[in-house]
Image 1 (cartoon, rainbow, N blue to C red):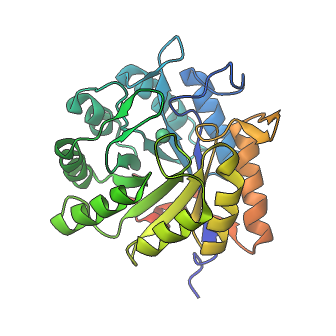
Image 2: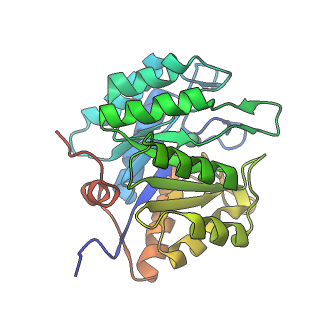
Image 3: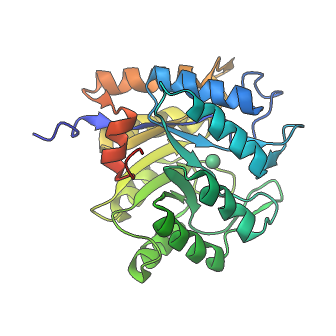
Length: 281
Ligand code: ZN
């Protein structure tokens, strides 16, 4: 029996672009807070950390020095071998080069690959030009970084299938289904079942729901055999009206739910095998 068959990867998205300290004072914003939150999440059972950075005022940014500081702080802790997943989301129409530069310099194990463009409902465009997606897919192959293909609606999944066929994305791929983002598919479990059916057979996949969709999507994902993403990027409330104390609190809950369902959280090394990430050097 494959010893990895009952392991599920918990990924923690600690900061994201939008939550602020006003939403929940426990959202990690500064590099030291982000690194500490990642460490605590790893201790609680997370095997992947999805990283966004903020400027000194807490606004979303893609500042390379901030990324560098966060990655250095996490990697300086030799005890913690969590896999890093850097966002390439490029807030505010950022130049393609600047979106790829942190990957070239910092070589995370994974990066986000947002497979299409979308209007956030707060008047911003989530812009992922085909030119950028082709370049990012090929850069990932060259750098040995696994793209985490984020799916906010069905068209993005069909685009991913197109890029796989074209050789821009190399199978077997890893997908992250995100439901409930403003402008994306809503949290309806039929949507999750539908997207799940369209995934390539050889892929690995994970799913998350934003806000109150967090729990139903997590429970359904466990039932469907997927991997999990939790964290304050997606949800700042532990229960309705009760702000989360930390990202680790979400990870600990995901671990308990997996264990109750007969699974175990994958270690970072097991996650590297399950997702086909490059070995640690
Ligand atoms: Zn993100």
